[in-house]
Image 1 (cartoon, rainbow, N blue to C red):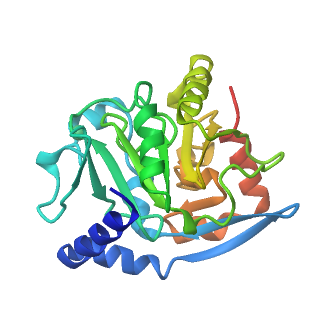
Image 2: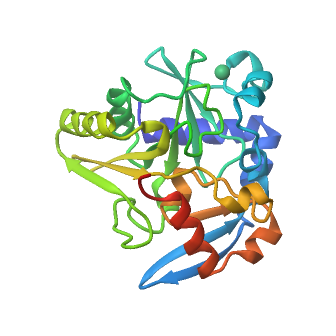
Image 3: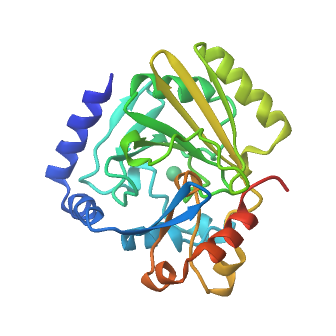
Length: 270
Ligand SMILES: [Zn+2]
């Protein structure tokens, strides 16, 4: 399996699934603005199709009563999959953030814990080097904290290297190695000391080398979410310098001061 399988699958799904095709088309019209921090440019993207995820209720009662959209029995008929290791289904994300966006969902309805899955994490990065593999902790942006899933996002979407430092803005820790086992060990050690539920994690592979990056999180949603002032739900992709907003009024409200306040609330260790 490799990049070309994903590209073919992507085209096939778009031709069979009008809702997904329409949402990928809409992505071409996403409005953006850049906010500058000492040479680091942070992009804000107005993407109304993300409302379904950004505004989702994530309390245990709401999660328990909604049909799980990653379980096969609840998926739309048009949504097909690629089998991976007989353990996961690679699915097209019908509500994309990036121009090519997949979800790698466990075949079973199991909770969002990455411990014990670092082998798959590094292998997916190597199989699909045009994509980053990412994981949202259960309390750090996962919209299905009850059903295990990785995501694959096309690398060309990202304006900065994921492991590039963002001093004073966003906390992150990275590790690079030509040895996938060393990367797995680094991640295991990291999460003996920090709760993975409060982390966004990336793995990517290029020129024989893996790179893993962890974004530790203080909280998932900023205070502004709970007062209704700004409805955002930052996950892994937001932490790389691409903040997704789903309401036009929020897009207008976010300036350097507001963004600094939001990042201070969500990035770092408790
Ligand atoms: Zn499920």
